[in-house]
Length: 107
Length: 123
Image 1 (tube, helix red, strand yellow):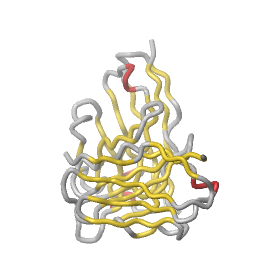
Image 2 (tube, one colour):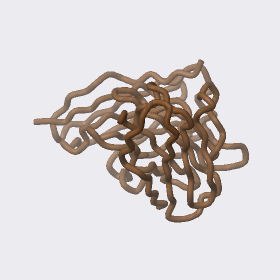
Image 3 (cartoon, rainbow over the protein chains, first blue to last red):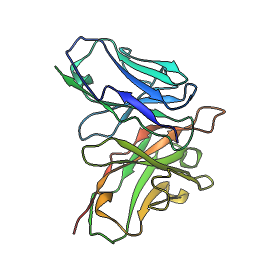
C-alpha cells in the first residue's frame, strides 16, 4: 500500500492569495496523481490528473506539479468559490489511496 | 453527458444486509472501471475498490476486502455495493465514481462522481 502525507491539514488564506498544498508519497508514483476539490455536502470534483493536467472546465488559476514522490497543488489567486477541502490521490497502484485532505478556509 | 445516479439514503440496524446502487449513463458502461469511495462523518475520502463491468474484474482495498462486495449488472448499467451484516461503523456517505485509465496504463482515477448515498446504521 502506498501511503501519502498531505499538508497542511488546515490552511487559512484570503481572497487573492496564492496558496500551495503538498502531497508526499511513501514511494515513487511517476506522475500518476490526481487532485480533487470537495465542497460541503457535495461530491468531490476532479481538478487535475497526471499530476499537472487540468481537467476540462477547471479554471487556469489551478495548477499542479511534481513527479516521483513530491507533488504540489497551487491556486494562484484565490476566489471565494475556492474555499473547500482538497484531496490528492495516487493511481499508480491499487489501492488508489487518498491523502488526508486540506481544508482551505477564509482568514 | 456522463451521469452517475445513486440510490437513496438508507437507515438500517446493525446486523442487517444492504445493497446500494449506482446507475451510469452517457458513456459505454462496460468500457470503464467504476468504484466506490467512503466518507465517514467529518472525515476524508477512502478508496474502497473498483469493478470493470466488461469482465467483472474486481479490485478491493485491503481495508475493505471481505467487508463489502462490489458487483455490476452490465445489462442495466448499474454498479452495486453490498454488505451482508452492517455495523455502526459503516455509517458514512458512499460515493460511486467512474474511473478513467490513461492509455496504456492499468491504473485509473475517478473522473465522474455520483451524488452520494448516505448509509446510517443505528440500533
